[in-house]
Length: 366
Image 1 (cartoon, rainbow, N blue to C red):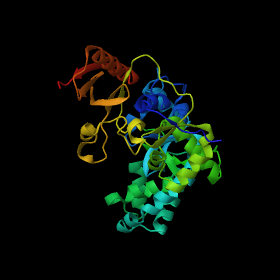
Image 2: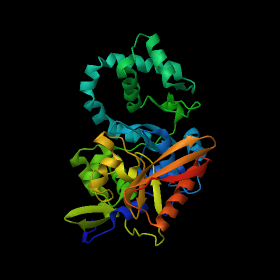
Image 3: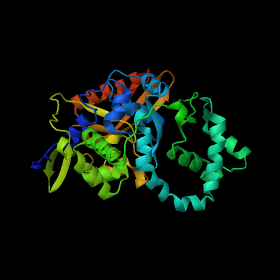
Image 4: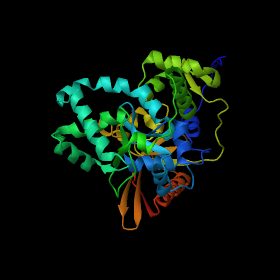
């Protein structure tokens, strides 16, 4: 039975910190983090490692990369044509559910690139031969294979081919070779799979999104998943009895029941493209419109790493690798109190420790 919405004002940002495992994380492994959120944005690899690591207290970048190497999480294009880390067991049903609409939406770009079904099929056969036997190839090596077979890769053609073959479930990202990403055959890399029919897959996706991102709206779910509104609404209905609904300014927000906010004060340094911002269509609950241009300069889709205090984005930050250490520069939108400054310094040190580096903290003047 669906829980009836209660009309109330709720601290949306702070509750999302809890549901997203940023505060009071209940997760013990990288795979648990990724499964709890459903998927973790991973356009920028180093940022994605920190996105998982900050949700796994005491972990290091080495620990998260080990989860990739041991095949408990995998990086591919499961939704919205965007790279994510997803649980290894779930990658196939997620691809099957979410990528056909993405592929259909690329038809114009495919024509512009003069790619055909025959080209994709030929490229697939090339990679099946080249990667068979658990071999791994960097993107450069993959493109060389294509060029040798007369498939030109310039102008975005090579990228779009591996993008399509990944969404079709032929290949996925493997572990890094030095600093280079590799590709592997999905069926060899992840022979164990979880199968779900379409209705079960829709319900599971909704369950993970609202439990791992709540409080959130059905419009947020549509944005995050790339589903049609009717599909997203039906999926939410299928699991609504497991969720709690709150009505805020005539809008329904759904979350896991029994969510509470820890008493202790915390601040966070979140990476670029973190789920805390990108997981929602409407970000006004955590980001003032006046500061949006500082987080997404020029509105070009590139999200800056952000400073978060009490569930609100209050600044941006960046890091520069130095010899044996990392410099973290904080750029708050407003002057920080002495206490907040101390807390952000500690957060910067945790980021450095994650990478095994000493940390130099600098704060820009407001």
